[in-house]
Length: 233
Image 1: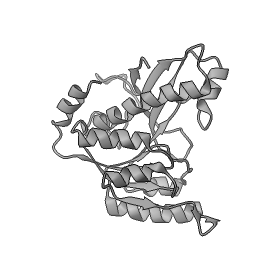
Image 2 (image 1 turned 180 degrees about the vertical axis):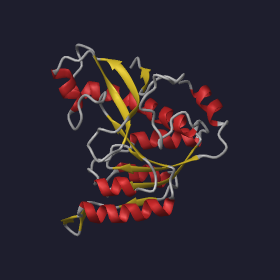
Image 3 (image 1 turned 30 degrees about the horizontal axis):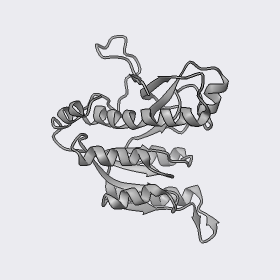
Image 4 (image 1 turned 120 degrees about the vertical axis):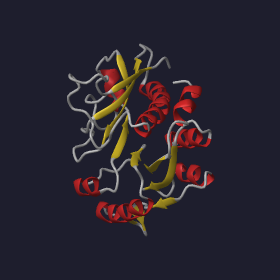
């Protein structure tokens, strides 16, 4: 979607969508959200970032944008922080921030059902494959080995079952015969950088309702989920 259209839709929102982001690595998708929010192209406020790694570059991105950061490193004092301990601190921090939606963007820890069910806001996850295909890791290599003609990324609601929640949106691209896992990953990442802000815009505008995702759209005048972006990248 062109930037001008994003800005036009963004201006129609009464108040910004409060977004908290969980990260583990570089934070390129976080940076896209920061840039879009600062440019007025997205009606969102990033209220905080939680990282489970103290060396994640996403922390630098958040600090540079003056966004509150909580570092809950899974290695503390030479010992691995248990998932229970992480979730206790993360839940307390999220409750303080009071987000409208929690975004898992490159977050590499599996969360418990209790944490997901008791989170102060719905959680969505960005997954590098066209769900329900290729749940889990190594999605790009698996897609190439299977001879897939199309690949991409999905945004879904987080549930206790891994990568199994309702799929909200997808970005699709054609797999080139010369693609390697690395080149395909780079192309899919470009799709992620379009899909995530677009999805948050749809949520902010009320087009996608995270509390009541439609399961049966046969009687609806709206397109069925997942909504799809076809990319030329």
